[in-house]
Image (cartoon, rainbow, N blue to C red; front, side, top):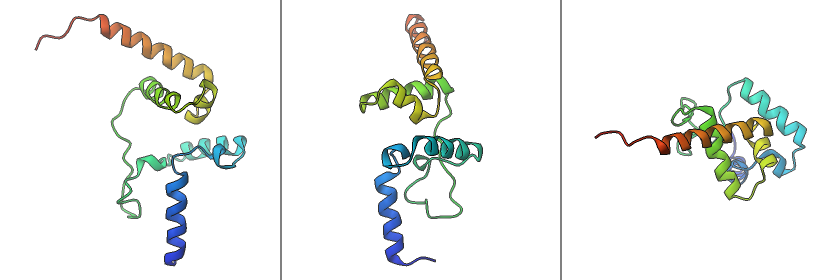
Length: 124
């Protein structure tokens, strides 16, 4: 049990910082990377996976959304972060991958998109 005041502080903190990388909130890069690696090893869901209406329910389950190949997820996340003004290195760090992995995922994604564009439309 917590007081209403503590609950409001936690809610406000979550709303302000849940979608920001830790290093943009004053956390050292090394510590942020360690925390992300540790959380991934424990299969902890990111804040985005929780529905705001049920996050306080102990029986709630995270929603990971549709399962897509990793290279697609990386490429789509890259596109969004790039629109927000992040450079390639920042995006790689935020996604928890090396810049090399990011580059390979983008290359493969573009290759698959080009292949799909040259395929004849499927008969309806």
